[in-house]
Length: 350
Image 1 (cartoon, rainbow, N blue to C red):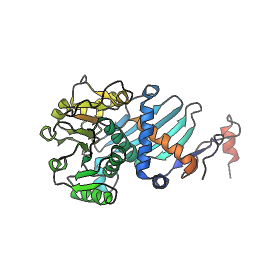
Image 2: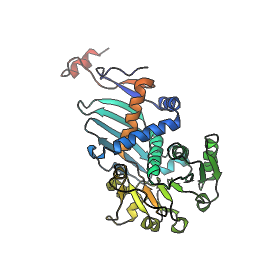
Image 3: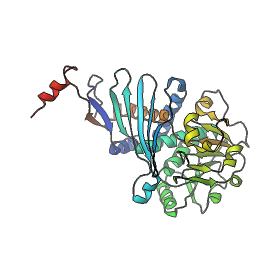
């Protein structure tokens, strides 16, 4: 299947869940995460071109529904995403998402895509891209605390982009850990099932926390964190939801995507508004240092940002130009005379 010529603006490519899974297998999971990481890095390096705003969130007792918009002046993108921790107990995904790209010059959509699967890939790609900048040199082992839907993607992205060879798993639900361990078998990683967070972090140079309870939790306490590690805190992501003891934050050099959003949703909501943080785009462009010593504790307070979704959608759009793997949606009215929308309706009468 080929993508229509630009003149056929009434048809919009739609990447379904099935097509997304086919695309991932066509490219290869690790290669696709490496590719998405390259697009994210390229877009972060031109950070100042983008419109940037904290995501628009509608909170409820059960979870959150959010819109995440951005534009580089030529292409506009947004993602719809929810986060409902209770869903797992009801047999539903905690996170679901879809996204869109549009041409700024005309306002016409140019891509509509599922993003539940794609968000897992872009989140893992971002984590590994940042860990490549901040983790200790030669890091080979990651502790994966929280073994839900993100855990396998996080583990394999760290393998593909950072070169880790071992992952140590812990979850309060042993079934989640068994699921993750089974899925990672044969993927080129040594997998160790651990009985506690303390056990999981033994020997780990990278510690990833990815839990979903909507509360101020202490997944990691201060006495658990020794010098020289990199913490990849990707759980939480809403007001009132944290994973780390505040003492850890005070001992760490903290790196974020967009401070205005992270101070609302990230671990640093526990800190004063003027607590210093560094932005990842500044590390990538050499404006601020990343890891500067072997004993430094680095913390990526990751909440996800719209530019990462923009990058992932841009990557998918480029891939389907040749791979196809999309439906063409008739979702835009296209009358012969753009002023005669009513006439188009009348001519369609049975």
